Length: 194
Image 1: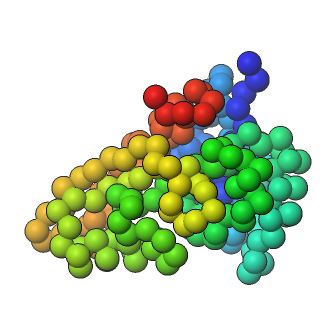
Image 2: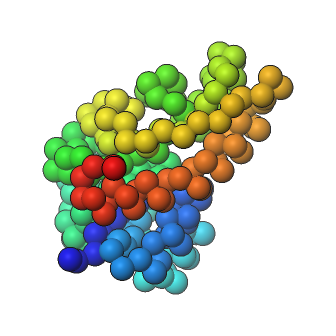
Image 3: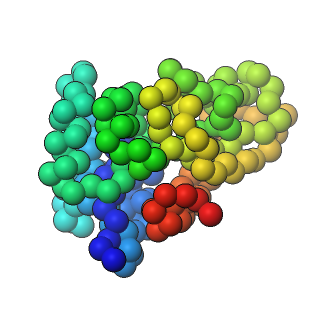
């Protein structure tokens, strides 16, 4: 069977993208074929050049569905992995890749999801709500922000003295540990996390 080709979509520092690139570097089944960033990211671009991964930066304010479709088709992409991608995925792309777009969200959905809920906004909301636990949600992407079918969730307890910053560190550790292995299991089973 041919390798499953992933495209990583990013908007932030790219730490999850870097982690995924390293994780799949020697895989016989899965390869990171392309990275698309909504802003210039020298660190990720440099790693992509080293590993011969296609890197493209779409810095314009609106990303057109056609641009994304052409980018993915040109690179023969099988799966799109949102690793800190802050733009809404156009409906045309969701329809073109049904249950083949996976997102990582830094909270336990369905709470603390939706437009504007990303990064420190999420951690601040969780701490202010005096939640006793938080975690990460890995889910399929549909036409609505953070509403796609949940694939897997991993939790941590929140300390009484927790700050958004300390929570962010704990969540980041969960992402680094669990996101690549879940992506691998979903992609290898071709559709469903088992």
